[in-house]
Image (cartoon, rainbow, N blue to C red; front, side, top):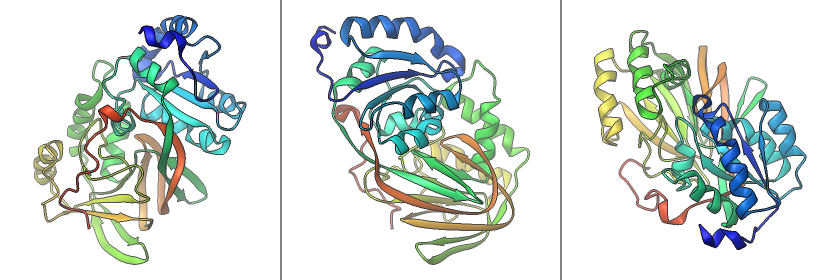
Length: 320
């Protein structure tokens, strides 16, 4: 990558490696990353994080406007969002996780790590919307998704899955396992001030990116810079109905089903008489009986690979 030898950096940068990403496989990249930086971007350091709080503290020590290159997956991005937003840092991503749905939306998925790193350091950053969930006294920032119900239970099971399974196979394994414990949650959902649903649901998940669950194209028309989020509402489904819906979701053919609905919004409120499991960007976020979600337009500047972006500009059926 000869052109990187004279790389001009648009902002002060720091590479932050999550050695636990991809089931701990990211740790082997520490030395290759350091050697690459010494050859192509002298002055840029690579720091291997030692826990979430230490990584956040490292970000908070950077000057506002600095570029943080995260080497990891959706979980890494999710855990660092509070510090990135607070410090006003730019985000660039070298995808190395199990899900990588944020990387897909940024056009970074599928790139070799050195190509992704070169782009992460030199390309300009543009604004990206974020979601903010307030759930019973705590705040949950998310870049890709905030799931509630079945999706969250699947995500938590996936985190405990076999080490040899990665990406979509791991998510499918978790989904099939969760079918044995299938349940529904009663919810009253208010979307931009109007009651949208009152009754049992399988899940009520919010998407900022077109995909979740390691590439499932559940809201193909979603965009990360349109100033709104998308509610994906499903159910109630039987076990058989849920199992039959899965291949439709994998193929992006679920939007015509009468029990599946998509609703774009700026502000959402959900209430339930029972505890509902939540997850932000695939990371378990506890349970809640009431939570509010708002879109925060342009809250984070991010690096995108324009040549590898999903077809977000095409309007798809199902968006109101």
